[in-house]
Length: 319
Ligand code: ZN
Image 1 (cartoon, rainbow, N blue to C red):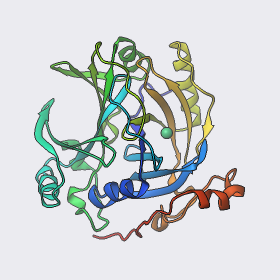
Image 2: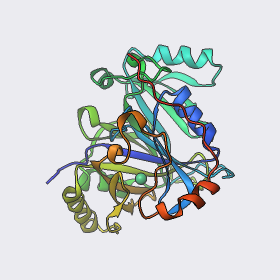
Image 3: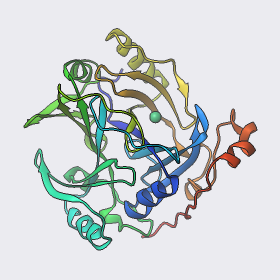
Image 4: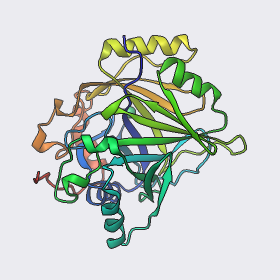
């Protein structure tokens, strides 16, 4: 039985305009668009997936773009920052790239000894690009936007903004196998997973701020990695033992999931690494067509009429 959660699987964020979202994460950040599907629970909304070139767990950022969504309001009970790892010598490349394209960013600054810059996506979601020595050991890839040596490798961290963090920290350490790796000012950093799958959670506790309001630019949920159904069921039992209320397993086609709200108010998912994004498309054609799970296929025509067309580009692998 797994003793620790093996890092982040994916993070899902609410967006507004799908095209602006696509352009930012593929053209500017150089992520690969790996799946165009719908929110399985509300199939009149896209579910857009970005990641590394195969959409490996630990690299996958996904969005529910509601075209006329209002912006959320920042507050507690939320994930307020998503950080990505780039190799330790790549931060200057990113600084120059953003400066040349006249994209606003803050930094470089330092947190827990790591240099990083931050910028906002089109809906105001805060993204950090972090120089991470761990990323030096992970192969990069190039789709024509970002040279392989500088490409985003994986998630580095997220920031949990909580009114009270005590019970969340108990869940992290006693159930999920996370380790406290440092404290800096009023931020505590926890580590989940190891080596290539390691990701940090920075806890920022603030007892005086109201709960956030969900909307465009806010995180919907974070999913943690587990290998397969059997291990997921073990996690489910542990979460129940801790006193929380996970759902039954839900089939998300590309992975299987359970969901529960952690004590600080953030929606957690535990998702299997299997079967992955190549279950219904091959490597070259990932993201090229609207994919629906079989139970939504009968409604394809209606769904396609409702969704705003999205202009996507073919993936051309470069060396
Ligand atoms: Zn999810």
